[in-house]
Image (cartoon, rainbow, N blue to C red; front, side, top):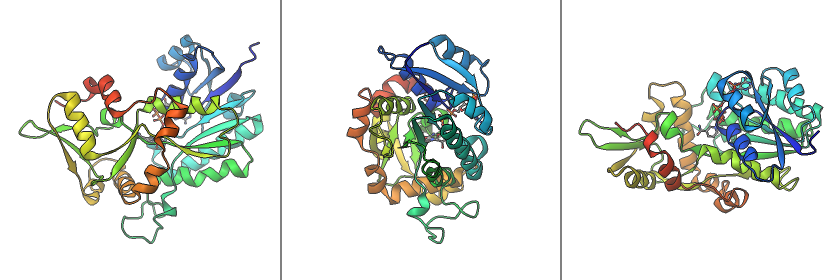
Length: 316
Ligand SMILES: NC(=O)c1ccc[n+]([C@@H]2O[C@H](COP(=O)([O-])OP(=O)(O)OC[C@H]3O[C@@H](n4cnc5c(N)ncnc54)[C@H](OP(=O)(O)O)[C@@H]3O)[C@@H](O)[C@H]2O)c1
């Protein structure tokens, strides 16, 4: 039996959890044993994690009993939810309750919960600067997470609350990258006006979580935010221009226009960008760059991320 501490990782085959798994498995000291949690241990991604040295176990965040088994004997657990699979903050809250309940019952000593702000603390429902969505949210995919923070506290689960940032990878996977216009020029559209958007390489979220676990109990009970850089749309367009060797113009899309785009969740994302814009100081201030680098010295800048990923941007 190994005497290393085991960390159970929810979403191990995805962006955040995957980054944590890879960070732990590539650690020369192998300080932690990795338990990768997936719904399907036979998927190609899960098998690849097993080949890298992870223990792979089956569990579903909708099934608390499966989570209890997955967390059994673990020292730590990384918890994340998957809003864009179901678009339901209520379902997200139920899943957080399942993870917190399982962590409590399994006696997990340190949970990292990947959360975001409950924006209604800054924009109450009667604030009509942005529409209320689903009758009780302003930014559903933020609010459901932030409102669920208390579930860990109420159950007495030792937890670090990790405020994440906009993945730069959204420029590849979420269709948010520069788009060619009719004249062939490239436009980077983002509803951020002249304000700064905290961004991060998705892989760095897991690396930061690894840095938090490495600090032992120091950050338990703390609310910590991470970002690779805080950049305006102009600054991102300039970095994109340099990386691609083609001029990329920034277009500050109005919030209402963004909300009316024809894709699921456009209203949620439009409200999210307006929140980040209107509360720039608070939102950037909660994601300290020096702190992020202190727990993850390899933290990437946007230029660094672009150097590795520019070929993956589908710019036509
Ligand atoms: N995109 C952004 O800029 C951004 C920024 C901050 C926060 N976030 C938040 O990040 C969260 C998503 O994290 P991610 O990007 O790491 O996810 P992801 O890359 O989409 O990974 C999702 C993984 O979770 C697993 N999964 C899905 N449903 C599950 C379930 N019911 N039970 C257990 N596992 C399940 C899946 O693994 P299996 O198929 O192997 O089970 C999948 O590989 C969202 O809630 C989003 O709001 C996103």
